[in-house]
Structures are given as structure tokens and as C-alpha cells.
Image 1 (cartoon, rainbow, N blue to C red):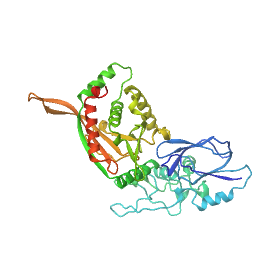
Image 2 (cartoon, one colour; image 1 turned 180 degrees about the horizontal axis):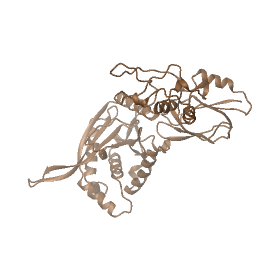
Image 3 (spheres, helix red, strand yellow; image 1 turned 180 degrees about the vertical axis):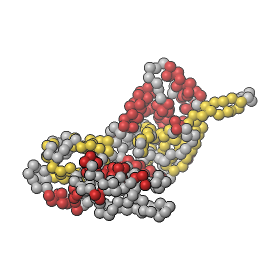
Length: 412
């Protein structure tokens, strides 16, 4: 019996996904547990495993195409089974989310309509009405100056896909209908949201709207910590990162102030028995927050080694769901970017996030009245006022300041 293969939600926050690579082709037989394709979710690239067995009769969504959760991506059926009704159904629904012509009028200073909201991230010449093409096909055609209206599509319902454009280029049948040299770089460009950016926008908007934020900033003198780190690295083969030390010290501060290690849930406070600290890591299209679990019971070297692996795989998009979900506290460190001080939006379900700036040199007055120089760093705590009071946050911030300023004494 013919069956639909639809896009599944491979993470709790996933609403859309991109087919990174199909591992099967039409005509292939698969079994339960086989990896059918790789899917780029809002956080990472994950395997799509078959929930049953069958034969791939038709692939609806090609590599690099985006699709909503629940939408049809392929059809499985016996070799000689009629699947025309399912193909017709997919055509009626638009084949894929990309076939819908959803326009947002964007005009240049001269009033020219520039873009289709679902088009590629370049300044566009508007395509003729009625041309059905995948986003990737549109992008390649735009870059190569090809008129899509002159091509025949091999996709469902005659949709033009990447292979059609590339074939036209190879055979010399491409019709130059859009001269990209005429597209001024001064015109606006529309950059569609990736799945990851879409989820980031929704989650952080909800956090800012639902959680009443308040902020506390402390300045810590960093000379002792810098010296302590230098001594640690002088006696170990592998260097201990600053972020690893920071995670350990924050974990100690949370142990002493458990009222910050909480989450809001249905008009109640969840007091976490564990201390799982997430670190914001930048990616090309957003960020992800890999988590060091049970940080308070781990040493500096263990945290540093674990963090190095997590950051590497986070940037490659290879984290598992468990490695970036359900933290109890988050750190965002922009010091390496030269940021002096900033505030951060709380990362749900946490009740607080620590924004860490760069280490800088500043003059100060010594006890004898002379002027000296020291290293310092700003830390700004963002808190959810529904479950964290100002005085509680102030005690935590000052405890953390003392721990950072005197790490050796604090860890005894």
C-alpha cells in the first residue's frame, strides 16, 4: 500500500527543515531504521530514519530544499503500485511550500518592486507570474542570468528544479533573460530566514515578551584569575580555556545561590537539582547553546576538554538534541569580539543569562595614593523577574564577582 513520507519534527522547536542530502534514490528498497536522508533542523543536521519498510517510488523534495513539518517529502509504494492519486494530491497542495507565490512588496528608492519574499538572498529581478521553481533553481538562474520562463521543469507538476537549470547550462540551451550585471548593488536585498533563524526569532521574541527582564552589572578585577589560569596552563599539556574556567566559577556561584538556578513553569518555580550550563556559540546562520552537564562536579580540565569538543561539533552542526536542550543557566561571552559590555536576552527555559564582555586594562588608585593599572571585566546578569527578585540576583552577582576575583580561595 502506498504511503506518504512526511517531514517529521526532529527537535522540539523544529517547524521546518531542509533536506541536506538524500541517502536513497527512487527505486531503492529500505527497511525500518534505515537513514533515508539528512535534514538540517533549526539547530543541527540530523538523520531521518525510516519508521517502516518499503520502496522509494517518488522523491518530492530535492536536496537543499526547505519544507514544513508534516509536508510530503517522498512516496513509498510497491514497484507496480499506482501512486498517481498521491502525486495529484501533492500537486494540488503545491508540491512543496516553495511553490506558493507569497509576495511581500519591497520597493527601491525608484519604486521598483524588487522581490519575492521566498526568493534567494540576492537583489532580484521579478520573475514572470506562473513560473514554478524551487528556491535553489531560482537562485542558480538568478546568478547565471537565465530566464526560468524558457525552461521546462522535471519536478512534480512541471516545477523547475536545480537539475533543470544545470542541464540547460551544460547543453547550451540556457536563455539569458536576466542580466545580473544590471542588478545594482545599491538595491535592497531580501535574505529569507533559515529554519534556525526563524526559531531563534520566535523563541527570543517570546522570551522578551513573556519574561520581564531586569539587569544587574558588576565589574570584576581579573588579575588573580589571569595569573591562576597561567599557572594551570603551565602545568598541563592541554590548555584550559577561559570559558571553561568561567563555567566552573559560575557553577560554584549557582551552587551557593540555588535561587538563580531555576525555571518558570505554569505559575510555579522549578528548582533544579542539577547545574547544567549552556554557552552561546555563534554559527554562520545563528547560534546554538551546547551544554556542560553537572558542571559543578567537574574539574577545569574536564570542562575544557568537553567544551572544546562541543564547540567544534556545534559549529559543524553535529550536536545531538540532548547536547543543546534543557540547560539551567546560560553564558554569552562576546569578549573575543571586543565587546566591552552588553545585555543578553534570557534563553528559555532558564531564569537568567550572564553576558560577559572583554577583559580590559584600567587605571586605579593604589592604597599609597599612586596610580596603577589592572585588568577588569564587566558581567551583566539578565533575570526573569517573575521568579527571581532583585535582591536575590544582586547577592548572586556579587558572589560571582568575588569568586571570579579570587578563584583560588573560592574553590578551596
